[in-house]
Length: 189
Image (cartoon, rainbow, N blue to C red; front, side, top):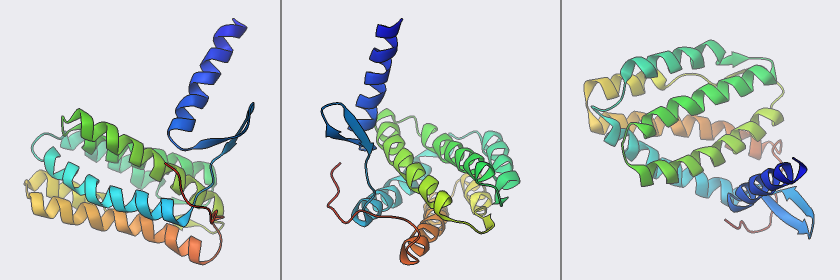
């Protein structure tokens, strides 16, 4: 039983290390990998290129009622004063965006965007922990749903990008205010 547990822990640490979320600090020591401004920018830029394109590929394939249900969950949690409720919002938001990517039917794109979305989720979790005032992170999903429903691929990409950039703006504002601790070392994927 103990051997199975340590093998599971080793596999989990291996995944986190490979994903760039932890790094070695010695032969038996792992630490949470620091965020850098360069890594945040790169992750956001990649997401801004790939997710609007994925949304275009999802046109005509996505379950609009599923998106509406996920959006309702996001909206119900979008204004919060409690971090735990904020984390639940981030989870619902992650599932909304993952549903769009999943509808593309493109396994490679899904795999690459899953890594990027998980990296963005880490950044947003840290941003949420850095924020102390009541927040409202909702909005934007209705426009994405309407564009997907209309079949207008150009509009889908446009509103998806606008939505992503609004969330990114929150992070950049917290960075400028000095509320997100960043490492100034170069980022290693």
